[in-house]
Length: 265
Length: 287
Image 1 (cartoon, rainbow over the protein chains, first blue to last red):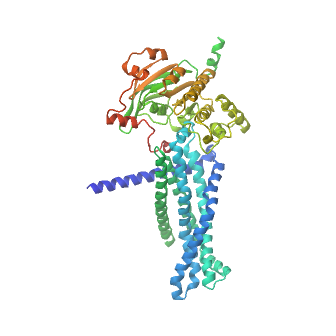
Image 2 (cartoon, rainbow over the protein chains, first blue to last red; image 1 turned 90 degrees about the horizontal axis):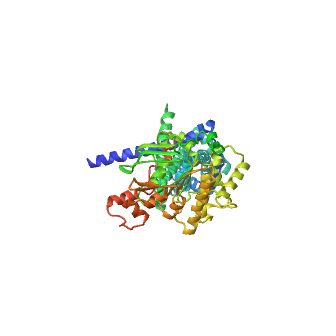
C-alpha cells in the first residue's frame, strides 16, 4: 500500500515536472516564433553569442568523438560482415547508424555536457544572487531575456552540429574502409552517400531539433528552480545533466517509434 | 499658487496615498508570514520598514514589488491593486518602480554601464547616444562617474550598491525600494549610502521604501517608520514618535535589548522562511 502511494507520488511529480518543462519550452517558443511579430523583438545578438558557445566551440571535441565513433562502428560492423564476405557493406552500416541514430544522440550528449550544464549553472547563479528577481522587478521577463536566446541558438545549432557529426562519423568509418577493406576514399564516400535516403538524414535532424528543445528546457528549468546557496547551483547542474540525458533518450525512443510506424503505412 | 503647478499637470499627483496596504496576508505553503498588514505611504514620503530577522520585513518588500503573491488583502500602488493584476499589467507598474537589492544583483556578465542602461534599452526606443547621456547622468547621481566600463566584480561592496541604485533610477521611478541598503558594508561606506538616499529624497519627489534593521540609518532617512515583528505591525510613526513609544517590544528593538536568539523550534522555522526560499521559481510563473 505504501509502495503504491509512493509510486503514485513519483508519477505525479514526474508529470508535474514534464508540465513545467512544456510550459517553459512553450513560452520560449512563443517568444521565438510569435513574440517578434507582437513587438517583442528577438535578442539576436545574445542568440548569436549563445550559438557560438553551443555550436562553434563544440566543434573540436564533437569532431573527435564522432570520428572515433564512426571508426568503432566500422570495426564492429566489419567483425560480423567479413564472416559473410560482405565487408563492402561497412560503409552502409556506418552511414545509416550515424545519420539515423548515433549522430544526433552523440551530438546531444556532448551538448548536454557542455551547454545544458552551463545553462543550469548560469541561471542558477543568477537566481542565488537575486539577478532573476532583479530582472522581474525591472519588468523584464527572465524567459524572454535568458531562455529565448538559448532556445533559438539550440534549435539552430543542434541540427548543424548533427550534420557535422554525421560527416565526421562517416569519415571515421572511411579510415577503416580505406585501410582494411579495399575501398578508395572516393568510393567509400560515394558508397555511403548511395546507401542513404533523404529520410534517414531528415528524421535524424528532426530528432536533433527535439533534443535541442529538451536540453534547453531542462537546463533552464533547473537553473530557475535553484534554491538558495552555492551548493544548490551544483545540485541543479547535476540534475540538469542527468535529467537531460534521460529525457533525450526518451524523446529519441518516442520519435523513432513514430518514424517506424509512419514509414510502415 | 505657482508651487502647486506640477501637481496640476500630473494627474497622478493627487493627495491620495502612493501605496496602500489593506489587511495584507502572505503565506509560504501552510505558514502565514504576514498577518494582516495595513498602512499608507504618501507620495514623496520615505518610509523605513524596521524589524529583526524573521520579522517578515523582507517578505513584505518582496510582496510590494510583486515577487511574492499575497494570499489575501490588497496592495494599491498608484491607484491599482497589484494583487489582482496580470503579469503584463504588473510590468507596466514595475516600470515606475526601482528596486535596489541587498547584494546589488548586478548582472555579472555585463559592464556597469550595460547594467544601468538595460531598463532603458528594454523599455524605451531611445537612441543609443541618448542612452549614453542618461547613463552618465545616472552614474553621476550615485557618484560613480567614469565607472561604466567596469565589470561588477571589479567594484567594491559600496560601489556595487551605488551601481544598483543607478540601475534602479534608470527609468526615473516614482517609487524606489531598498532592501537592506547598509548590509555588509562598513559604517563609513554605509553612511555614504544613507547620504545618497537622503540626497535622492531631496533631489526628486520620489516615494522611498527602505527595509533595514540598522537604527542609525533609519533615523537618518525616515519620514516615518514602521516596526514589524512576527508578521505584525507593532508600531508606526515618525522617528520622534517611535523614540517616545513606550511599548515593550518597541523599546526592546530601539534600545537594543538582548534576548535569547531562538526559543522554540517553530520560531526558528519562522525565521528560516524569512530568507529567500526555494520556490518553484517565480520566473516560471511569468508569461
